[in-house]
Image (cartoon, rainbow, N blue to C red; front, side):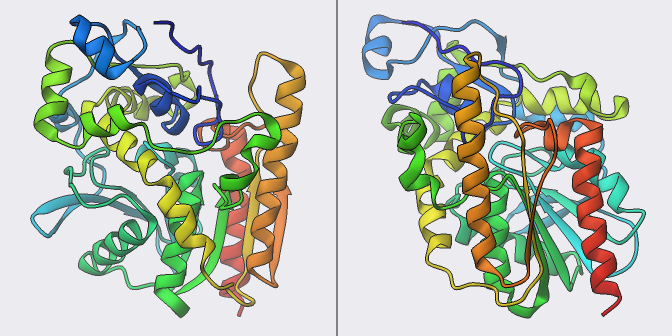
Length: 364
């Protein structure tokens, strides 16, 4: 069975997997520059799974991240630990939420720059980075409540500016609704808007839906580990790690190849529809300051498709403006969905927008 080609810097939530996406394609669609694929083990596996052929680096064991000391603290919550990394001083505190399949390391450029202005925290959701895995649902409501519990356990009380990239934007939209007045600003970075549920066909993108086989495999840790052990699961990445600070590269490489990250990413993808329906039902945020940051480019080998989808994505980003009477929109020139965090100059533009909001709120 053929594989689906994926190129560097394909937008994770808005890239173009086939209607019956393989495990590899589905994770590439959601994860930051990572692909997971299946290789044939026996004829019945092919018939059951229908997963594409791709030979990559075997998925790393969950414990491999243990070779890198976490930059932050491991906070115990309901029998498992979540990694929270806070730096800088001052208020409001900035909370960074990465998209599906991403973690605290993706924010390295931005967190370092924002920490010079105020306190800023990134974290790893369950199953990512240094955090333990969990079988709790991966919808926005659950993610928001887990983030709230983590911050309270760590003594981080707010007020908060919530910043979310990609699917992380949907998560922080819910977090803001749950927190009420404790969230005083939102920065949505190429965030996944509920409008994508009904507009993807405008540019030839398939509908967002669960993949029954992939969902079944990742639903059980034992089954997933068996699939990995017999060679069904392969993980690779296309990202140029040199885009990140040199001291972050070894840990980032290990994170991208983590088997548990791959499993969790599929679970997050399977909850995208639930997440977007949840936040689509929320009321607006009044006059809370909201900054919407859009990428400029869409990566596709067909220039016409790339242009059409880039404009479509900007339209989806502008839909966020309606949630607040105090919203602003900006495009980072020459950026794509992923480079907004990974490329130093594009990440600097995002950092500057966050810092402007921080300074504005400090003057109040």
